[in-house]
Image 1 (cartoon, one colour):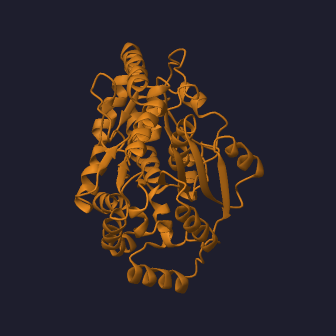
Image 2: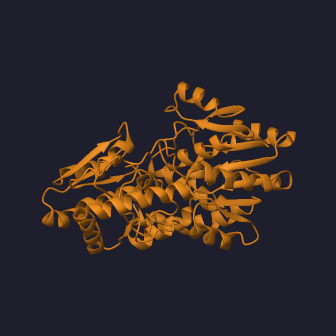
Image 3: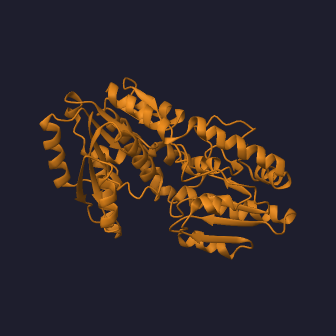
Length: 399
């Protein structure tokens, strides 16, 4: 197949967040047997070496400068909000629009040389014209529902700007319902998102393709390190991760330290915002910032705790911890889309449930080893990028 792939997010190196990881690994699988033309946007943070490396994975790489960051002034924000209500397009999507990229894409679709067009993340839908649906198969790879995430954060009380999100919720629902109808096929990461989008586009085929793990980057840990060290990992400028880090450090950890005075917590991830940096003032808490090796951090931890209270979709952090053989205690949000039982992970949502589950693992090395082995086997069987790539390839081949 000749595949035209759109990604406003530059997907290399595949270590800067879930969007890059999913986009790059699916691309890397597809390029084994198909010719990919990839249209991407680059920000000043993208280095020439990254562009050169990505060119090795595609037949043709077309690079466009990303639009400047929008003004943070209050008047400009209000103007963008008003425009969003008039157009039905959220500001973070509208800001991706780029006339040169749009003109180039128009010409490529008009040429008729592509067998399928894919949008890697829903923000790329801004470039897709509704009439293209009649010219070639169009597929949108939706990483998660922004409307469902917004609604869940409001319900859980974890929204960073509740007043703004209440205003935006109906806009986001209207937006997702609208853009879904431009595509011939929708791809989502969890059954929960499939149900959400089926209500938006009841006549459009939807396929669930979970994320995967690169098993070479996340090998099984050679041994249980023992000790009493907890880890929570993720991009520390992401609101659901910020909330989870605060919940763990301020509300769960102190109660556990009454039983385990030496208990330590490592918050591992790039770009920690001031609210996360401040957590290092708590007894036993270390905020690392970006680290050279995430898997090394995981291997040195006794237990991985993923206390997500918001955010939809498969969590890469959960898959990576299981692949690395780290016992996991996770919330419903952390384990969303994964058919995991109590022989592989411990589930917790309330503070008391976290206390019990984490204590159970700290006190029982044999249980940690059981979870370590079972978690790794589960990932090997169901959640590799080869498995995800095969499913994605089938969607694109069938239009």
